[in-house]
Amino acid sequence: MKEPRTSTTRLLVVALISMSSAVAGAVASKVAEGTSGPERPAQLWLSWSPKARETYVWGYLDGFDRGKHEGCWFHGEKMEVYMPKPVPIETSPQAVCLDALPRYTESDVHVYADAITKYFLKYPSDAGVGPPTIMSQLASPPSLSIDQIHAKLTGR
Image (cartoon, rainbow, N blue to C red):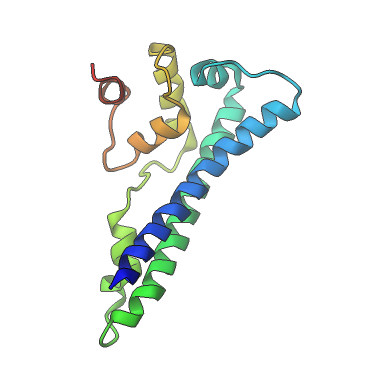
């Protein structure tokens, strides 16, 4: 019975690796430019052009979506061993997994890039709050506003 727990753990690892790939790409681009990046995530984000911010969000959303689907399909394949008979696709382990994970409901990357920008303009001193943290709180659920994210992350 340890297999389902192992599958869930692997699912989470795949999702985390996928989401962090966008951050790694952004940091690598700053290093490649030969600049020493700003110390705080807010400074780094605000130093980027609107196009760079949108590209980051696009990469984050793409990585999140790919990680979610890959992880759920991996989980589903492992769970099929425990299924006594075929089930309808809408109740398959893959479908249940996908339904349980957060979604990004906006199709326009500008919405998320603008939300991160507004957060950093309003709360530039929030230590340890970077774009991935803000993005995770913008997903639905929890689908928080920037003020709710700030309150949740800082305890204020």
